Length: 242
Length: 248
Image (cartoon, rainbow over all chains, first blue to last red):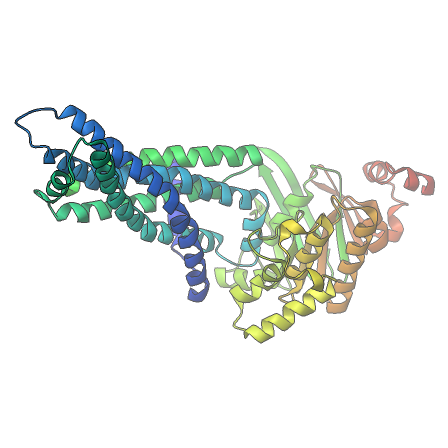
C-alpha cells in the first residue's frame, strides 16, 4: 500500500510546479522522437508477423464448408483492432520504452544528475517525467493505429502468398460487419496504457538507490509492473467500454 | 555567510550527524574534512536541502532554509552552486549546453547574453575549446571543471563542492583547488568543500572543520591543524607519510 501511496504522491509532483513552457515543448519533442519514432521499426516487425500468423492459424482452424473463407479476414481484422494491435503492441512498448525510461532515470539518479536539478531549484520530477508521459500518451495511439494497419496487411500478405485465402475474399472479409466504435476503443487503450507505462517506469527509475545493479533491477521491475498494469487495465477497459 | 545550528540526522536508527554547529564565512574556503563514512556528504546534503535534518537549522545570510516558505527556499537554492563528486553533468547535453542549462531554465536572458555568459565561464575554467564536446568525450578533471563552470554560471553566493579532487591526479587536483580558491576570493562567495585530500587542507583550507563519527571534533585554521591535540584528527592527518615527517 505504501508503494501505491508513494506512486500517487509522485504523480502529484509530476503535475505540480513546472518550469517555462518553452522548455517543456523542446523536451516533449525530444521525447516524442525517443519514445515514438524510435519504436516504429520494432512495432512494424512485430505487427506484420503477428498479423501473418493470425491469418494462417485462423485459416487452419476454420476448415468448414459452411463458413465462408472471408471469415478468416474478418477475424484477423477484429482480433487486430480489439486486442492484438493495442495490447500486444503496448506490451512490446512496455519492454522497450519502459526499460529505457527506468534505466535512464535510474542512471540519472545514481550519478547525482537528479540532485543537480533539485539544487538548482528545478522540479526534477516534472522536468524529467512529464514530457515522457505526454509523449507516450501522444505517440502510443499513433503506433497502435500503425500496428493495426500492419496486422491486417501482414494477414493479407501471408494469406494471399500461401494461398489460404484469395485477395478478393480477404478484402471482402475485412469490410464485412465493420463496427467503427472498435476503432475508438482501439485508440483509448494505448492512451491509457501509455500513461501507465510511462508513469510506472518513471517511478521505478526515479527512486532507484544504489548502483548499476539497482538500475538493472529498476529496469526489470518497470517492465514487469508495466505489463501487469497493462493487462489489468485492458480487462477493465473491455468491461467498461464494450 | 552560512550558519548551521545543531544539525542531527539518523538513518534507520543509526545516528550519522550528532548536533553539528558551525559558521562558514564569506570570501573564504571552508573545508569539512574527515574519513570515509563520517557524515561529511550527509552534512553537505542537509545544507543544500537534499536531505532534511531530523533537527537543527541552516541559515543563509539570516534566512532559515528549513523554516522558510517554498518561494524563499527556491530563491536560496538559486543562489547556490554545487559541484558534485562525479560532476553530475547531463549526459545528453554538450559541455556548453550543460553550462547554459541553469540560464535556460531559470532566467529570461537573451540567447546572446547566455552565450556570452557561458563563454566567460568556460574561459574561466579553461575549457573554451571543449564547448561542443559531450561529457563522455572529456576526462574526469575536465568534467569537474565543467561542473565548476555550471556552478558559477548563475553568479552564486554560496558554492558547495563535494570531494572536488576525488579520482584526479595530483596536478589536476591542485589546479581544481586553485580554481575554487580564486573563484571564492574573486566573487567573495561562501565556499564549503568536503574533502579528505590533505593537500587541499594545507593549500586552500582557510577554515577547517573535522568530523569524526558524526561529531565535530575540531575546528580552526590550517596553520593550527598540525598542532592539534585531538588524537582522532592526529591519526587522520598523519596517516600520510610526508605529513608524519612534518609532525611537530
